[in-house]
Image 1 (tube, helix red, strand yellow):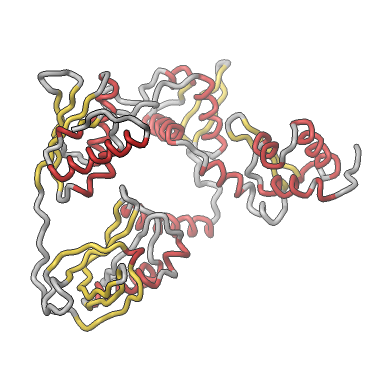
Image 2: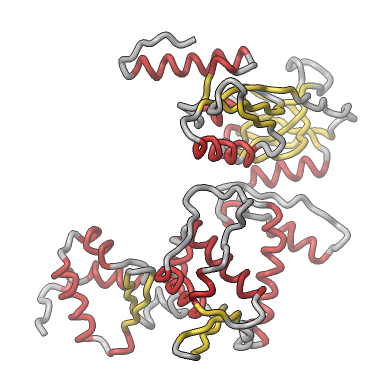
Length: 414
């Protein structure tokens, strides 16, 4: 085996191998190396290092190598498992859960042929496109991963393998590990109902010591846990809401005084808002205007005096918005129906009597313009001239004219 004269030649390769999260094609592209250089470097590692210091795991059809005992890999392929979890695609997760449900209901071990005959998706379920029947090789790969995770047992018999749910999933856990797992489950039991990740751990721990006290659990989309814990702005807003204090802050170069009501998260706009009662004019004495403020634009926030006894904030009135979408096939129509019902489960959908490819839609909403970004995602199926809201119709038609003009197209749009 030829030694490397300059260690810097091998150093980047060693570093990525130590992470345990990268496969051959990634390393070749990242390091600008050919397949031959990759194999030579890997052969050098195998020659110079003890045999048990290099471990190999498979992710799909790719091999991922890692070093055992390095500072990045102190817990049995932790980073490699994390990489596999983050790379898990929604369709694969769907099939994993489907297989686990089949095993949970089965009274006896099942072989692959029997599993392939199972209906993984109900025939009356409006599943999204992309979830189809899987091949035997894919089924075998999923089963192997479930066996490695300890969730499924493989039983040899009659020239084939049979599979069943594991009866010893937690048998190898010590008392300390069982206690840690209970704490983890308890923690996520409080987060999962909130849908979005993140929680104020300080408030959560206080609730554990004072069962009768219920603090607001705050979660913010796209914020890491450490960012949430240190986010003084959200702490202060939540404190003022609980203590029923007014707040004073700067918003778009204006000083605002308001009574904070609640924190809102708009999953579609991916922004966080503060809902508060504001004043008609800066000198007004009463807080009577229901307003929303983007939290990322709030600066110089400070508590004010106790909030006065305000009247109940006005409840936004729902009104009907009707529109039409024109498709070219039944498949497109079903996909659009699915997307609409995901956001508006109570939407009224029907097919036009005049044309079987025109979908009539009626929504119940508070604010027309808040629907603008979502409706843009339905181009080119959306018919702007059919929208019942004049303001929304005008904005969408203006968008279309601007887009077509930018492409050098000037058709009449009305």
